[in-house]
Length: 182
Ligand SMILES: Cc1cc2nc3c(=O)[nH]c(=O)nc-3n(C[C@H](O)[C@H](O)[C@H](O)COP(=O)(O)O)c2cc1C
Image 1 (tube, rainbow, N blue to C red):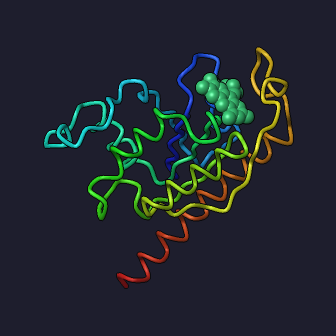
Image 2: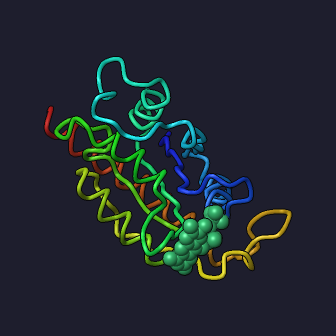
């Protein structure tokens, strides 16, 4: 069973990006347990003076959720040609300590708005995450959903492919580790 954590960069209730992750959860195969992180709004602004043990509970919860996941699927909107501040802020918390941060070597994939995906990949690479070469830009997101959820079959298939790629990466890494121990 591969555990995938979904993290949306949007806080709003009817977020297309969060809905995309909900659709990803449904599109995932039976060997994948998909959890959606919903604590982003509780993460306080990063302050190095507060970055002491114990860390703020909301930050510890995010760190534990990332630790417990084999892989992460991000979906983010674009805010002024970059990623939303609340997502960058959470990643800034997670990035410390640099050498042992929770995302280091973690397989991650990014979907969502076109330009922000590249921005988010750049930040995740800086943290040492294993960023998969998955492209899933969703244009005109509001036309892809109705009250029942995602209506675009092509996007549903691409989401399933993205999760499969994450699961394959996790499996390959487990194989590597077993090999190293043997
Ligand atoms: C503060 C702010 C800045 C935005 N900047 C951009 C932008 O630079 N480029 C763009 O294509 N859309 C921009 N948008 C539109 C959002 O990307 C769009 O509303 C997106 O659907 C929001 O994602 P969500 O549905 O997951 O909340 C911006 C929206 C907000 C609120």
